[in-house]
Length: 625
Image 1: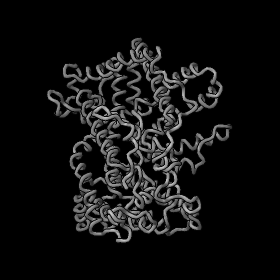
Image 2: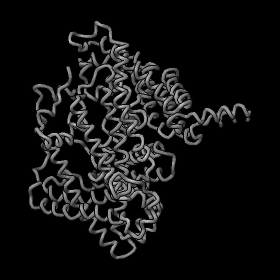
Image 3: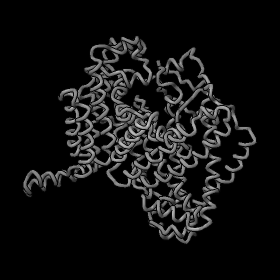
Image 4: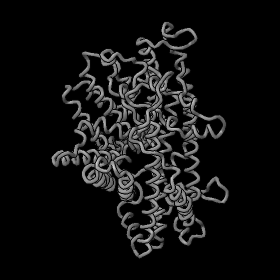
């Protein structure tokens, strides 16, 4: 039986009701409205209790005089921000000729479009072809299932499937066999003869997990995969020509063959650029297999009397797959699962196998359609911004920042961060949409708009959320987590943060500015940790909630400025560019006036962010970010 769409009863009818449902948290990801320890059917099935409001939630402030003042600030500031970015992007601007070469013809009459970002431009050009995959990939699976049907004893009258363990095993084998076959075809189509290099890396990693003594698996898994990241970068994807020169002593025939193979590198010849995401899946498989060896003597499902067809998300992740599920076929089907291969989101091996065995109850046609509509609306927003605000082209032209006013410099940087957010959000949402249509429900990567963040710590829980959860499970928790109750434990916690974010930086790319970005993030963690846990703990302000809210908001303003600086260094203008921007803002008195004005506007915005989270708590939802 198809799972019930639990939001249907709450949605209003008509176009406005549908539009509201598109932006419902449950549409974005049911994980946001369902506790990770509670199965979805239990939380949202017939007779399920309504979410209990958080007892610490504050009364609504939306209709108070304080917030009416904030609405007025929004009405003035937000249009002004868009106008400043638009004004410096107009052809009448005297600096327009400096960045015009980075613009292309747009689809809005009279406007060019800024597709100077290579990552988004590639996604945009290939979107029509990728959209066909969302249609044809599930159709190919249906054909495969028709050719290789489940045994008749596992199909109930009416066409529904049995939920027995044997039927689940048969469903898993059916899905994995298709995923394995399609993965090989997909690799060859994308990377041509370089697919063999990827399969060699996968084979070596699999042998580390399954053929070496158990005690060596974690260390060798991390060593092998980190070395793979460096080798892929330094060897530029192991060109066949270079291998021929090294192995064949410069034989002309071998070199010519190597060049011939290199020219047949498929649609994406530089496979190593996006292989980083596959490395995470390789580590996930090895460590999930390593931890499964501790539980071979007992089944957690039997011990806890759980329904394997109705597990909570935490159980799907933590309960090991069956020993026979750690096969090479399942491993390749997981590591090269087509919808999530290029960009993710990241799903653990245990969770992937569980969803192959039993179709997730969270999947419904209505929710997937609404998620698709939400993706289209985000794509439209990105296109409109790029047609009217040329901030990427301006930054790429390396302008003289002293020719811009402090307001223009600040808002160009601000909108640049939004474009970075959107260019990452779109592929993540697209490939998750593909996965949903195929019957696998991975985590949503982006929870909040980049402008809806005031805490450095919380920001990393909502930005690339599946990667954050991966880091928790496979790196942060095994290293001991964090504890600031003593000086010694605090020092160890800081070292843990540094190690984690060093890996994060190197995983993104082996570049110095990304290492600086990672270490800046850790450095910016510390003031928030010290302020919230040591200097101004919330429990000491329980009788003065308004004063604590104002104090927290001031800290939030500082956090936002630091996060903007760190992300501009890591993903936009680099350290030198940030220095130029800061010098441009502080070059005269007007810059200080603007900084005070901007901080005041941020203060208002953060107050609204606080209230958004309080409204979620009043609905019994705590996203912790």
